[in-house]
Image (cartoon, rainbow, N blue to C red; front, side, top):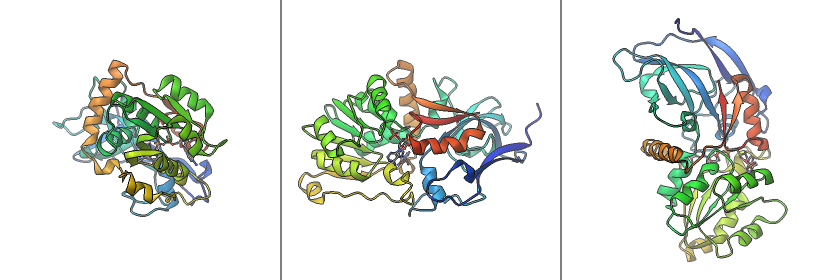
Length: 339
Ligand SMILES: NC(=O)c1ccc[n+]([C@@H]2O[C@H](COP(=O)([O-])OP(=O)(O)OC[C@H]3O[C@@H](n4cnc5c(N)ncnc54)[C@H](OP(=O)(O)O)[C@@H]3O)[C@@H](O)[C@H]2O)c1
């Protein structure tokens, strides 16, 4: 079969004011180079729509490990692809599934080292594009859940949080509390995804809701939201509490903020007196986590101990709208464009 010579690619075309809107992007057909020596050509099957794109597009934030996306540049991110061409004698063959970071396009060409083969027996390959490994890593390597812990996961209904409840339970947590802005998602998180209670901030101060759900406090926090939820989490933490700060949705996706900061008030006196541990966690600091996560996730999916909730989005043309759906909260679990 002849190899494709063009690719459809999502590019940023305008500097967004506030949150990006679909009109800030184009989906254009572009020439696709033939793979050179040592390169692999893949047809993408799926790619992730993720909130950090808002930060990368806004140009806000400091110390980011990846460059800002400027007008004219292509978006990128976690993807699942099928190999169409690979170097002779190398480990990859046409038909193999691979993960890589050249999402937001339908075909990609890159050096073979940028692709990771997916085990043909892996139960649900699309789950490997999700960022849920960040929750697993934070709960095992940063906040270190112990049997009997009470765990709070803020931002529980997204890609990371929707698996984190079950993961915390599998690691021994006695009670897992989540947060979301949507009552409908709260119901699904308790009915389907292992959460004992899910709080919907808004009608009452979040600190009051948390005190009701965890009257004796919490041992572990996986914080994906920041802001008033992080403030309340510190106030609710018990002696020796461990708080993993993994995301900052409240600052990242607020149209009034630039997308690269997320202020929160922390009672430092409490941190001192209760010996609280508050640490940031990023996947980039744990490159060895990916293989461990694949092993654990594959096992949990096979045994049925974990299910993978995701919102499929049909076709690359709908990808820019899918990013806006993250801002309105109109998706559940990981938001994944299928090609
Ligand atoms: N450190 C790392 O290595 C790492 C890796 C992956 C992800 N992260 C970070 O972890 C966080 C969660 O990532 P994710 O992939 O799981 O995202 P996500 O939850 O899939 O993101 C979308 C969700 O964010 C919530 N949301 C939207 N606007 C919000 C606002 N103004 N305030 C609070 N929540 C809002 C909505 O959920 P509701 O409708 O339920 O409120 C929406 O469905 C992000 O900050 C991300 O950048 C970090």
